[in-house]
Image (tube, rainbow, N blue to C red):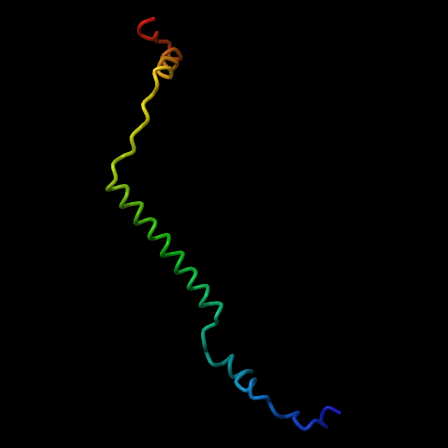
Length: 87
């Protein structure tokens, strides 16, 4: 019954280039291209951040510390056993 068809041995033109020839052509896998692109962008991002971090550490002045309040200084001195001045 299957051999009775007139077009059984013919391939439609839209599928002409597909099959074993396409797999043996040696083209790059699209998934590999996307993976390499994403890894490349991530690598550029991380290296750029590192370069900016090193540059900022060298050029920017150190961060100013907040002044310690008198209340906290008094509490620390009492913990250490030194009486606060003026008491």
